[in-house]
Image 1: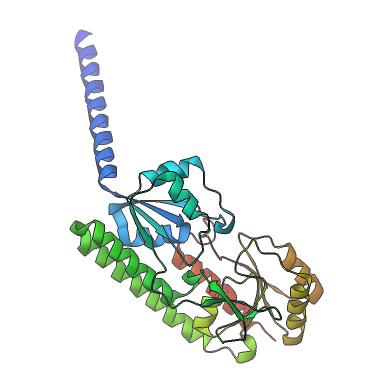
Image 2 (image 1 turned 45 degrees about the vertical axis):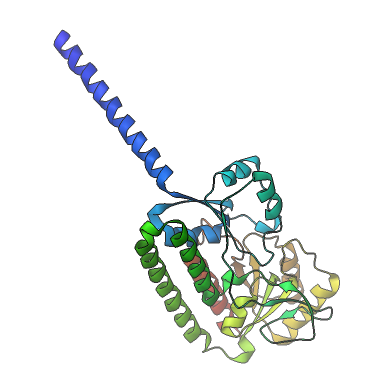
Length: 316
C-alpha cells in the first residue's frame, strides 16, 4: 500500500515538474519573440507571413472591425507600451493613432507600411463622384490611404516589413528574406492571373458602384471605373445629390457591379438597388479581414476579385 502511494506521489511530482518546465520554455520563447503591434488586421496578416515563428503579432483593429471608427481601449495602451515595433498603414488612415502613442509612452520602432508606394491623390469633385485612375479638375485633399487594395503596392509593404524585421533581428535575416520572397511570389502570381482575367472585359463592363471609395488602387491596377456614394471614409455622409447622380449613372450605363461592404452600413446601397433594380454583386471586403469570408490578405484579394469579375462578366 505504501509502495503504491509512493509511486503515485512520485508520478504527480514528475508531472508537475514537466508542466513547469514546459510553461517556463513557453514563457522564454514568448519573451524571445519580437512583440509587434499593427494598427489593423491586414497589416497583422502581412507581418505574420514575413515574421513567421519569430514574431508575436497583435492588431489594434481586429478582424471584421472598421478602422475608420476605432476607439483604443486601456488594454491597447498597455500592449503598445510593451511593443518592440508599431506598424501603421500611414497616408492619414489612422487618425486616432497619434493620441494613442502619446498616452502609451511608446518608445519602440515605428514603421509606415505604405511608405514608398505610388500613392493616389485624394480627390474631391463637387460635381462628380466618379473615381478612376484618370486625372480630373479636382481639389487635392491629401492621399487615398487604401493602398493595400493594390497587389503591386503591397509588394512595397512587404519590403518595408522585411527591412524593419532585419533591422531589429539580424539573427533571423535569412528566414525573413525567405518568407518575404515566397510571399512576393504569391502576390506576383495573383496579379498576373487577375490581369489576364480583367483583360477579357470590354470598356462597358468596367464600372463598379460601392458605398465608399476604398477601391481606387484596385481600379487603377486593372483599368476599372469606380462610382461611390461617399468619399474615402466610412464616416462620410452621402448627400442626396451624390445618391441621385450614382442612380442616374447605374441606369444610363446598365451597371451590374453594385456592391455593399462587409463592415459598412448597407442601407444606402439597398436604396440604390430599389431605385434602379440593379443586381447586387454582394459585399466586398474593404478595410478589415473577415474571419469567415477571408481571414488572410490573399484570401481577401481573391474574394474581392472573384466578386468583381463575376458581377462585371454578367453584364448583358
